[in-house]
Image: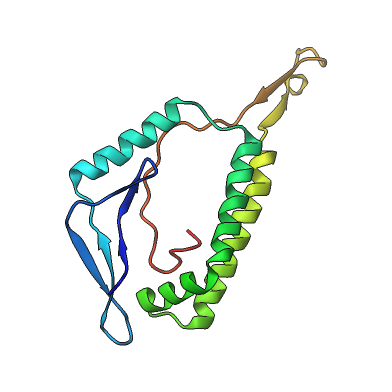
Length: 158
């Protein structure tokens, strides 16, 4: 077994010393080791995410660039990613390739949408007695840190 995957917190690898051995679903042989989080590493991850949030939102063009770069980096590693998915999930190669393609599409569509998230205009004149030349608008802004657990059925796309 050559693969040990640390946690990534604030862009840095973290190893708690505790691991989960992942078995290949077909051979039942050890395939990889995944470092397990604990309460302290979870708190560190949330603190790092909150610190990043306090620095302020990235401009839309930067979010788009990051998503496109992620899609490109993932594409460059397609064979290894698909092989890992087959071993870890037990899905067929075809299913894993479909999941990979969905993930690529999700990243690229999200990159396009990142540039379009502009909010909405609300016509004040739609209310009786209001000046027809007045206008209100909303702006979509992040509101804080979100923690999520990905489902097993589509781990890469999610």
